[in-house]
Image (cartoon, rainbow, N blue to C red):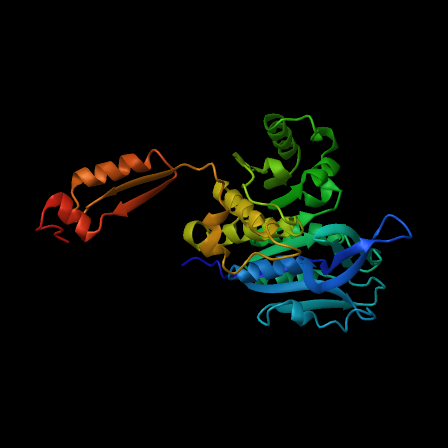
Length: 383
């Protein structure tokens, strides 16, 4: 049996995402700015919280480990209102002055007008996760995700220790980090980064605006050879994504969907790539000696496409697994054939096989009983 509902620990920065929507009434006589009326506002769990919600919606047993300062003025916010009751919240309390990061996005007439960030990023002078905590972590979960927005919680040392411990126990570790020190990711099972983060980590292989996809692919391959990372994933916006494993290189084109809001797309991609790998563990393999593949990459691309068609920070829907075909690329070839098929014979099987070889999706139509009688006679259909 697959363990797509396996136990996952997400470690990282919980961000409070607020969205405020306004309607422009008229231009202000005091300057070139609109006079607005507030029409809606709501809060969402961003960062590692968004990853937790996505993986829970995909059917996983999720624990969220995050930094929560004791004196945080925002701790009165009912965090549980941002999560399903089944998601296990595991805050690590500390005396740090760092508040929970808050991002307030202001929209006027459905256009992103500005964003206000309220945060005080200071790396704690004391490691918030010790060796015993990490040891218990790798013994308790099937897969671990680090969602590091560099808000002062996940230090360089913590990343290195988690990589070492997960490798020792053969626990898959998926990292999405804005950390710019490449040495921190040595021997990591999987690192997922975007183009900007790639250019910060691999300055000798920077991706330029003038580069085509072939040139970009070669640079990412060289970066993978240079680094000690098992699976390197680079998301490239409108150019899709590229995965370089120990033995293969895979590309996935962007899916053709209407872009409403790109907020949370990276979180959705990270959640989906981890889930796609996890659900194969019992079916195909048992340890991290096996790399990611094109199916994992395609699945993650579809998941990211599903959230950018929505407003605000939205996790992967709990209906995504049933509806994911809706988000597939529209340049796939769809075939159609039909027949009576009331008596299946080798000719039918040959027809269907040949038809399927000429398309990605084959739709088979079955003639109605009335149609079969008109074509084959009053004694048909047999079945």
